[in-house]
Image (cartoon, rainbow, N blue to C red; front, top):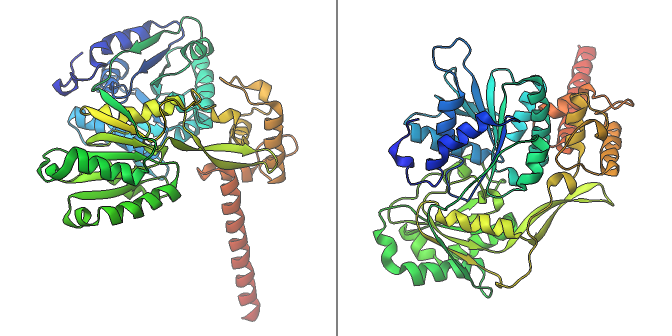
Amino acid sequence: MTFPHSISKFPITEHLEKICSSLKASPSRALILTAETGAGKSTVLPLALLQAFTSGEGESSPSKILMTEPRRLAVVGVANRVSELLGQAVGGQVGYRIHLENRISPQTRLEVLTEGILIRILQSDPALEGVNLVVLDEFHERSINTDLALAFLREAMELRDDLFVIIMSATIESKKIAAFLGDGTPVLEIPGRTFPVEIQYQPDLRIDEAVCSYIENKLGLKCCCFKTPYSILCFLPGIREIRAAQAELSQALKSQIESGNVEVCVLHSSISFTEQKHILTPPAASTIRVILSSAIAETSLTVPGVVCVIDSGLSRINRLNVSTGMENLVTEAESEFSAAQRSGRAGREQEGVCIRLWNKFDVRQKEVQPEILRTDLTQLVLECSERGIYDISKIQLLDSPTKNAWEGAVQFLQQAGCLDKNRHITERGKAALSLGISVRLAMIALDGWQKSEKKKANSAKKQKNFL
C-alpha cells in the first residue's frame, strides 16, 4: 500500500495494513476498531480501505465503500478531508450523501453518509449489492439509527458472504459488540493521540469569563501575529446558553471583534447548514475564532486550529417522558466519556489545553444510555414495519427496548394512521418515512399538506360552480 506523506504523523498510519488484513481474515467478516480522538481513524483509514476493498477502474461493476457519520456536518467534513488527502475534489473518488444534498459521481468509490441515509439504502436493497464494505463511525453515540443500521447490516451479511463491516469509535463495549457480530470478530485498539492536551479545572468561571481570561492571559497581544488558524472551542448544552454567551462575548470583546482580531461563531443544529460549514474553514490569519457549540462538535469534526477547549460540563439529552409519551430535552452533567471526547478536540492539530468549568472531584456517569433505551421508538417501529418486522422479538438488536415501549409506539402509529390493525405500514406511514424527518414532525407536515390540497380542491370546485 502507498499513502501520502502527509498522513505519517497520525498514530493509525503504521497500523493500516494490519487493520485491512485482520478484516479480510475475520471469520465474521467484521472488525471492531477503537482509537483515541485524533488518531486518524475517520480520515486516514479510508485511504487504506479504498486500496484494499474497492475494485479497479477497469472492472465492469466496481464495488463501493459506505461510511456513516452521525451528523450532516461530520459527513461533509470527513468527505472533504479524505478528498484533500487524495488530492482530489469532493465528488470524485470520495463523495457524500445527506438529506436533500449529495456530491457523488460514477467515479465515487467511497460514499460518506448519515446513518438515516444508510437505512433508506438498506430498506430498498437489503443485500447492499455493489457494496463491499460498510464502516459505522462514531458508534459510541448509539443513536436509534445506529442500532437499527447495525441490525439491518447483520441481516445483509447473512444474505451475502462477501460483505464486510467495521465498527469504529474512541471507546465502546468491544466484547458485547464482538459477540453480537459473531464468534472470532477481531478487536483492534490503536494507541496514541496526535498531540497532548493539558486538563485544567476552573469551576468558578462562566464560559465568557473563561474565554476572555484565556485570550488575555495566554495570548495577550500575540493574536495579531498568528500565521496559522487559532480557535477556541466552547461546549454549552443548548442554543439558549450559546446565544447568552455570544451576547456576553460580543460586549466583552467588542473592540477585538471590530478590529478583526476575534471572531465569535455559533455551531448548533438549528443554524443554517451554510453557517455550520463555515466552521470547517480556517479562520483568517491573525484572527482568533471563538466557537460556541453544542455537542455537535464533540465527535467526527476536525475544527481548524483548535488549541483550547472550554467545557461547561453540561449536555442536553433526549429522554422519553413516560406520562406524555413525548421526548424531552433534559440538561444534565455530561458523562466521563463525553468529557474525554471534548478535551480531545484540542489535540488534533497541535498541543492544546482543555479548561473544564467544574470541580475535578465531581461525580459523573461513565456514559449515557443508548437512545434505544431512553427515547421515543416510533421511528424504529415504523422502519421495522416497512421491512416486514411486526414484533420486537423478530429483530436482533444490540440492546433491545422494553416490550411496553415498543407497544406504546405501535399504538401511537396506528392512531396516526401509519400502521394498520395488523401492524403493516400504510401509505401514510411510507410517506412519513420518505420525508427524512422524525415521524411526529412528518405527521404534522402531511396533515398540513392534506389540508392545503383539500382547500385547493374546494376553491377550484367553487370557481367551477361560479363559472
